[in-house]
Image (cartoon, rainbow, N blue to C red; front, side):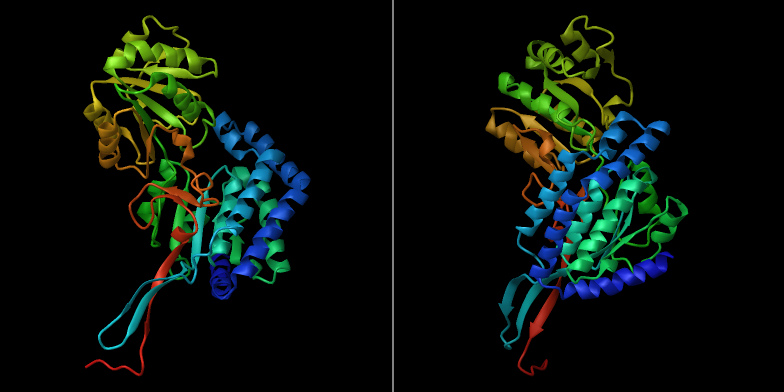
Length: 418
C-alpha cells in the first residue's frame, strides 16, 4: 500500500515541479475557501476525535492541541492566504558567476521532491504542511496520529478537492489513513521514493526515526524553553513578557518552561512572578534558592523542584523557577538542560544581550521578547511544517525556502574542457 502511495506522490511531484506560481496559488486560495465553507463537517469530525480522546484519557495539553474551533479554522485559512502572498522560492536564481572560459554558472532553487511527515494531535499541521508543500512544488505523505484520524480525513478530502478543481494532481498529498504503527517502520525505509522525513511528536518518536530511518530526518518541535531575568532587567516590563510566554498557549513547544532569575533581583522579583501567574492557574517547581526567595509559599502553589523538572517540557500551566548567580550560570543551565528550541534574556544591558545571543545556540534566541513568537506565521513565513532544532539543513520554523534545495545550472556555448 505505502509503495503505491509513494510512487503516486513521486509522479505528482514531477507534475508540481512544472506548475506555475498562479496555479499553485489558486489551489491554496481554493483550499482556504473550502475550509471556511465546510466548517460544520470539519468541526463535527474534530468533535468525534475529541470525544474519543477524552475517553482514552488524553491530557488537557493534548486535547488543546487536537481541538479545532471556528476561530482556529479561520486562522488556518488566513495562514494559507498569507502563503499565497509570499514569493515563490522555486526557480530563484542566485550566486551567478561567469568563468574565464565563458561558462555561465548559477544555483537555481528547486523543490525537495517528496516529504514524509509523521505527527500527532494537531490537525492544523495537515493544512500547514500541505499548503507549504504545494507552494514549493513538493508532494507529501502525511501520517497523523490515531487521535486526529477523523479530523484529518475531513481536511485531506478538501485538500484533494482543491487540487483537482485547480488542475493539479490530487496525488500530491498522500494520507496514510491507518493508525497501524507498523506502517511507520515501513515508511522509514522508503528512501527510493521519499526525500526527507520530518517527525513531529515526542522524544520517543524522534529517537525511533533517527535510529531506524534510511531517509534523511529533520527533528525538532520539542522545546524546553527558558527566559533569563538579568540583574539589569526592567522588572516591570519583564513581568508581562514572562506571563505571555507561559500562559498565552501553554500546550505548545515554544511556551516557557523554566524561568532563571539573577540572584541580585530574585528576592524582589520572584514573589511578583508567582503572584501574577498564579492568577492564571500556574503552579511552580522551585529549586532551594528560589524557594528561599519566596518565603513560605503555599504548598499547593509552589513545590520543591524534582530531579527531572528542569529538563521537562511541561506543555501545561507549570513553571520551573531557579535562581542563578550570573549570566554565565544562566547560560550553563540552558546549555545543559535545554533542547535548542527557544530561549531568551530579559535585560537592559546590551553587552549581556550580545553575549547571550552569541553563546546560546538555540534555533531562536530572544532579547526582551516572549518565546511564543517561534512560529512560521509570526516570523512572516506564512506557516511552518516544523520547528527544526538541529543544524542541518534548516533551523527554526521551516517554511517555503526550507522546503527547497538547489541545483547547479551551467550554460556554455558548445564549451569543452581543455
